[in-house]
Image (tube, rainbow over all chains, first blue to last red; front, side):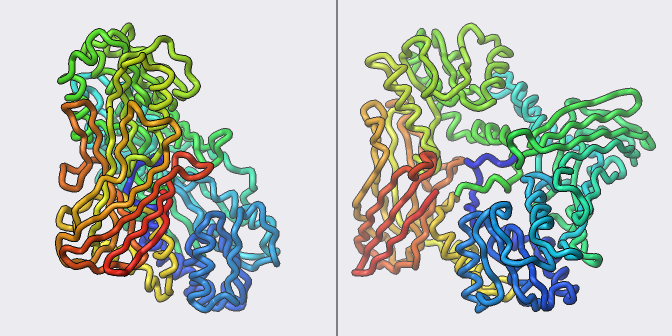
Length: 315
Length: 315
């Protein structure tokens, strides 16, 4: 994780089509903007990591007085052209650069951003939003999203165990199981069928974007999951939701419509059998990868019925 | 191009499963090794960019006296474990590091490598093989593959024109066509149906690995393609094949079984109508991206019936 540069048929731009085409995502932001008109009408807005500029266009359409759309990649020039083509150059100013390096032209009332990565925190873009909050936002301003929660549960996954791991047991006659062992330390991003859930779920991080400290980027949880049936646990599953506003929640739960974020799976070193009603203790810590702040290091310890499974992961 | 780090469900290790699972690729290498026993039996072999070590295992099985398996990534440790698990530690030595930085323990008889990228040259790994040739190989040694050819033809692609480009014409009511214009400069890696081919094909690069200069990394071709039917041309299609040995060719042609390399599409700024029998002049230049030698800059000029289309691409 993530996908190596080398594979996949998508170009960089197609990724923006995939994001905008993720209707759960885009419609949630659109609803948050249009169903909370008082938040945007006549207000100065900052869009952190604007990409092609779609959220800035929504904000302008909703009556924002001015929108600053910040984008570090070359897509900034494209966004500027899109703004011009829609006759909105007087409302939306595209600024090319890292949020951290730019000087705010003026303080803003609202910061909107689609910063969430796989397992919420991958890519580390939340820190840029917090920098924006501390340097660009007026006292009493509003963040969209305002709150983010990360959830965990345990899942069964006989299929991936067979396809992804056992596949290496004999490759053209060679024992390549060491490759499977290695890949168990890499989270897998995939959509999980609700029938695969073995336990209830627990919140492992609950972040108030308005108050969280800029350096509060390590998370630790010690929670109990209850087995809903007698089953084999192969992996811990993480997903998130965010409150865009008080009214609009964007969820990536396995029980909701799949999004491009899917869910993130952390396979245990060995499967763990549990009985219906068992309490499973889950300890999980998440921290930025040292010297590579867009990555994440995750440690997971699971215990049930006196049996333990521990592993570390890097994504 | 390539896929952004952010998307896709594969982990880094799953990519190795995808490569080994590409049977056209892996079986071609296996045949090249086992059907040319005189090349490997009792010989010293270098595997450049060994990944999980599969080609080194094949070479050892074919009777190589010794195999040096070079891998720069962390996968080197996994390959070392695989070698040990198969009882081949006395035959295969895994060396972790860049080929360019390593000192050859001894000169080798054969260099084997699976270095090919999208459109053959993407990722620039051929240069590492040439460095190995110049510094590791005995006089009169053998390279596997020994020769590589890059091909071009013209294709029709109404489907992608509609899905990939026209999609941006109206996005939630906004004119985002500028994003489509931008994405036309990014090649698309995809499998093309043989029915989409509009012209015959031409060789645009023919590389003899034994003789090509280390710095011969720019390619230019000026060729004629003949329209096989009256049709609209949307893109120039590139693919490659390599002669692994005199007997075994590995092809990624749209007329052959699809591989994980698929083919690479370069969309014209505007479609170009051609009539059956028309001669289409194609000029194409390919060079490493300045300051980013794993990337490629491509310029394509197409002319038919007095009409021209020119565009630049970066992958």
